[in-house]
Image (cartoon, rainbow, N blue to C red):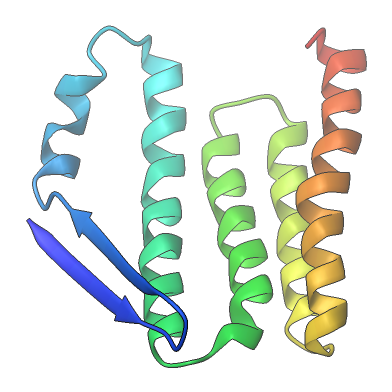
Length: 136
């Protein structure tokens, strides 16, 4: 087990990671069909990396880069897992990554708006596209 503690001026955060989880993940997913398993595994690694990176950035006080980091990492996870999905999913991931790149070069307030537009707006837009073109 790996425990990461982060103290900020107003809160204490603690995350415990099971260092054997990735080794056991294929056995945990035995009942899941192969495409879904590949999708989940390719999505899981970037998301875990993003969670750990968030802790590191917060621990050092780099809160202003979090919107860009979250959009970039979520976009990368969506692109990599989208290889096992319908063609529009990697496109959605690229859109998140473009928002993340933009969020890295604008003031923090604008980056937060882009974060909301990405996680709120892009999910709605691409959800609608997926529902219309692929039946849900």
